[in-house]
Amino acid sequence: MAQAKSKSSVKVKVQKFGTALSGMIMPNIGAIIAWGLTAAFFMYPHGWFPNKEINNLVQPMLHYLLPLLIGYTGGRMVYEGRGAIAGAIGTLGVIVGTDQPMFLGAMIMGPLSAWLLKKLDQVFQDKIKSGFEMIYNNFSLGILGMIAAIFAFFIIGPIMEVGSQWASAGVNAIIRVHLLPLANIIIEPAKVLFLNNAIGNGILVPLGIQQAAQVGKSVLFLMESNPGPGLGILLAFTLFGKGKSKSSAPGAAIIEFFGGVHEIYFPYVLMKPSLILAAIGGGVTGTFLFTTLGGGLKAAASPGSILAILLVSAKDAYFGNIVGVLGAAVVSFIIAAIILKNDKSTGDELEAKQAQMQAMKAQSKGQSMPEAEDAHESVKSYANVKKVIFACDAGMGSSAMGASLLRDKFKKAGIKVSVTNTAVRNLKDEDGLLVITQEELADRALQKTPHAMHVAVGNFLSSPKYDTIVASFKALTQVEDKPKAEKPVKKVGSLEGIDFSKVKEVDFIRHDQHLGTATMATSLFNDAIKKAGKTTPVKAVRINELTDDPSHLVIVTPAANKNLAVRYSDIQILVVDDLLKDKKLGEAIQKLN
Image (cartoon, rainbow, N blue to C red; front, side, top):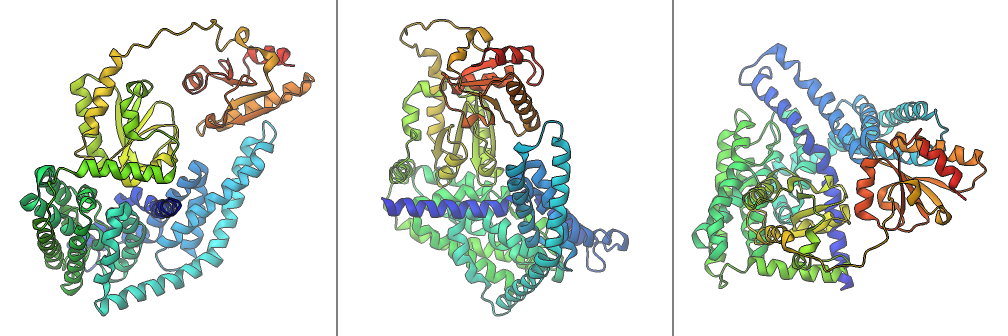
């Protein structure tokens, strides 16, 4: 059991690291495609429509725009808005420090600069006197940004330039001796473990951009995004599958090949692990054909659709790209067909096996929270759900389709609950949240939203759990609680409803969006308490850090009080219209011991 927990922990850490890398690239894929299309159409003299004037955009986009966007995004991931600015400043230092396109340097300096600023704020921000917050915020960011840029210019830039040259030389050497296809032996199994975006956008895309900048195209863009292996597996299920897997495969094949949502074929492989051989065979074949026939893309193909591949293919690479994709599909189809024809299962065991696997995983990890199936059995567990979020690795393809399916079911059932989708990395812990994710990502979703209700499914496009969720919401109107002993009515949120004899600490709620207001309110209230000769400690805390007992008096606005009422029952609450100057604040200070 301990060994299983250790393995799961390692897998989650690898996924989180890979997601951090891809998280810096994914939001900027549109900008990368803009650069690739500009180069493909107008680069002088090798574009489709060579134009010297428009060609002037290509190098600035490559050397400045894209690295700055990546550094900005990496900084935001670590420390929101302030981290984004720090990340961009630090990235500029590494850009100016070398002549190479600094994508890997940006992926280092963006998060690093933001992390340093975050640590600096943790040390000094709470010590700043009221009225000096703005001067601290501006100058701390400016000074640290300057230091980070200088450090990147003299240290990180030269190191990354040498590293980029070595990486580029290594990739070129591997391509020359035709060993690059062997990388798919690792890439294909990693994709099925939901590391596809981490490998593709976190590793291959940055290296591919640098190679494309040098030679006009890169086969690295195709190694993860090739839809051929998935297409071959799904076509094999269409012809030789059984039960639900056979009936759902044709639609999945269309979505995977033309929509570029590769995650849709992962559950089919997870159901029959031997099919990973088909994926590997297809991936190796595709990459071999790409390199042999001169295939390559000008920019990243995201999503990995055949349409996206054709749009960003280099002018001289269409034949190699098309043959590589089709060759990969043929080989994966042949291998998958052999495996499926010798399979003795009914094809209807997918959901049962996945549920069994999920139960064993949860047991081995010693999870204290209710599992998804246990949650389903209790209709009342849905009573506080106000929002449903589908979370996948990238937050675009498979989760969007799953959200659309459930949204349609809710509409037909007359259930008025919001259904949206996002990436796992962007999940926010909040009240009234139901998170639906794939089983391989359930650990990370639970870490991001420990207070949410969680449901793990094997396939976003086909899960009986959706019907259970709908039935549970519908049944809420039929659930009648047994009469409970009435509690004495008290004026919640008012001064009259507070027992000041029990108050040992006063808290203000910190929000990322209103951090300055909470900090200033805490400082002003603390100063007023000292002037009144009181010693009650005053703190600014996040809502998840509160202790649910009457010794805590929490001062909030009416909007924030709604969140407290759902999560806590014993803390004492004072609702004020203005955290800085409401007259109730002074009255509360007088009543404190």
